Amino acid sequence: MKIIGVIPARYQSSRFPGKPLADICGKPMIWWVYSQCLKVDELDEVYVATDDERIYESCLENSINVIMTSNMHKTGTDRVGEVAEKIKADLYVNIQGDEPMLEPQTIRSAILPFFDNKDLQISNLMTKIKNPVDVVNFTIPKVITNKDGIGVYLTRSTAPYPKGSLKYDYYKQVCVYGFKPEALKFYCEYGKKYGKAKIEAIEDIEILRFIENGYKVQYIEVNSDTVAVDTEKDLEKVRKIMKSRL
Image (cartoon, rainbow, N blue to C red):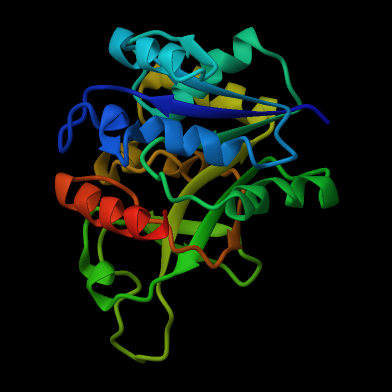
């Protein structure tokens, strides 16, 4: 099975423009993500997919495989879909470019279920929320699954609401996705025809496009300490942690 890792990276961001190029211990953030991906043995090839010349040039300077894509894409997964049109594979893994602390074993967790379940179309990761503040943080999508780990809903709100019981562990999304080519093709064709799906657009969580349209998204729980960089405050936190590890 040929497996391609793709790291979507755009310069424009409402909360943090230019974050893929943000310096972390002397290297751009995208370099750290790419380097972690190279440690995943199951990935045959890894590419950064961008629409920005500044990111493209930075990747070349840092010996990162990079593909220039359209600037019309609404989501990172749409960008992965363009890569899939250019490079054929049996599985595409979307790794977010704003998680420089993402562990290689965590990335592998989104891949391994495809070896055991030939019918699996989409995988996504989740991890237990340890900091109570994260439960009410709107930048962190919370995951709700059924008893079999199939995604029921993702939301930026606090959900489920603890009215009847406090005995519940909240989970947040870890933005690594595995896509079979057929599922990825559906996602991109839907986007070209309709744009974002209704709830996907409201929550601004791209995986909801699959759930809204009846696809089963398999969630895998991981024990991950990654920190997504959504703001400059997040960046400072990551810098301190990674500097302490060097």
